[in-house]
Length: 185
Image (cartoon, rainbow, N blue to C red; front, side, top):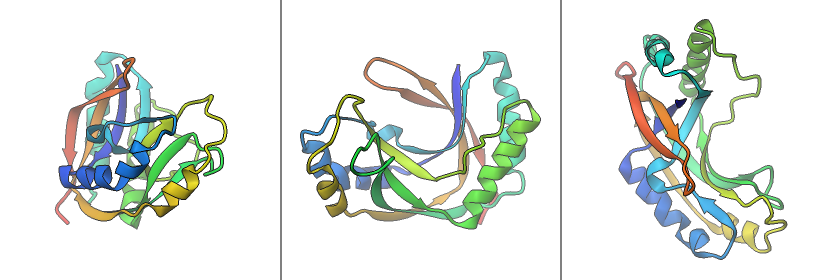
């Protein structure tokens, strides 16, 4: 099974993102948009793991959350990796409070203790909204439309979720396998 650890968004935040992106999504750019219900903030991607390791993973995430308090997370600003001239991933930014970094590092440490290799790349919190087709080349006008979009919202992160990802021809489908609450704020 393919697993990752994430922060899921409240429905009202997802709905606001959909409204904010409507103009960009309606434009004829070669982007495969993530289904609104699937937008999330990935803290740790685990990849394919044997089903028998799922309880160990859930316990490690619970251990990571043991001393972590709920916190507010703010979302705003759109962008693209690696840049707006040749985008491959369209994202909305997270303005990360120190609490998000502490939670992410705690998840890394707990999962490393049970055998998962820590990510060597710096944690760059963002929510993936779409992926540009590999053969798209330069997207004329894309940066202009993206830079005109506005979105700003915040919500309380009260739990981390161990998610399963099932890859399908029409995109990935996600399911919460375990939800681990954080301490009250």
